[in-house]
Image (cartoon, rainbow, N blue to C red; front, side):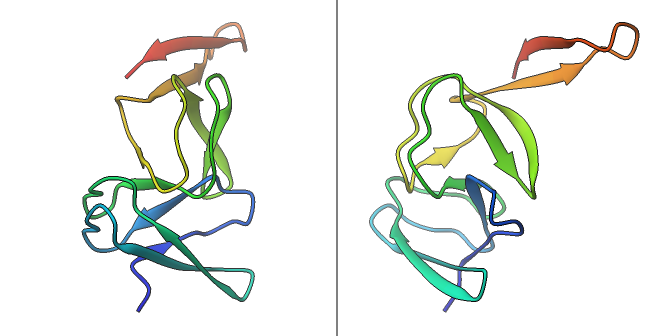
Length: 102
């Protein structure tokens, strides 16, 4: 039974649609294929799970959009949240990105 969703094949994270415990299988569908991985830690419902290893400084993609930058290494199956993700936002005045930690 699926317990996570991914919207865009470019996504580097899936979203848990029910709580997932460390060591449990994470199941989601991407481009018609069912994907299985193991949760490396507890993941709360509606929180993000890395679907591949993510290196520091790499953009994190959810729903096909960059949602921030990895602030430290994130292992496949790891929880992606404020402890390992920095937001980036565009300045509406200058059009440049401003880095802001979350």
